[in-house]
Image (cartoon, rainbow, N blue to C red; front, top):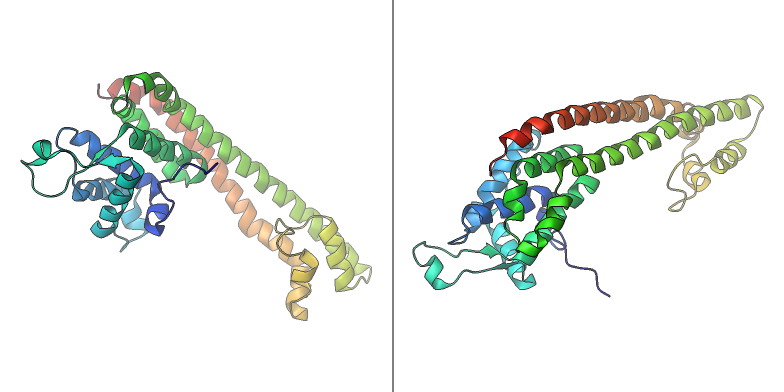
Length: 277
């Protein structure tokens, strides 16, 4: 059985901006349910949400091209995720207009939910915040029989919990990598002092499971292909250096993200009293 189509299936631009585009399309649709929205409306909301994510500061010069948005909308029509409103609804407004179908709205909601598990920390926070503000409006775009399901799926506390579990998993992996790097560095140092050759050290470290790409290229094959000086570094102090500079820093970042999510969860209660509708 073929997997269901995805928003980011074909276009690199969409894949890089899935979270922003999914939210932008739903926002454009919600803002113009009667007459339909223009590609430029979707692009505007894309700019707006990218600004909320500080992307215009972090990635200056990256723009959402209107032609790319038009191509995306044509694909959504072909999937049955969007339609063009009838002439009577759109004749007062110039330009081609679109409206999401319930099927398309549900698919875009799926893309938002998936972003919590697969995209950046910033995008996960954006999704939780977007849902906390507009959950009722989003569910209102669907058929009534789907409301109860999606109210549960789009629970911001539940989404935040998913984001937290993902970061906790990353932190566990990083903590293990720090510990194993220290163990491997000690083992390599002891073997070197005992007069072991590079081949023997590489063989021993490979058995210890020194890196996570063994299925792609064996560690011994990888490290023994280096020039002698680089090989000596990789079979010794390189492990500790990477642990201190990379893994410990990333672990600090993961702990900071968990603290930030604690703060976000505390603020969700306030957001619920301010939400429209």
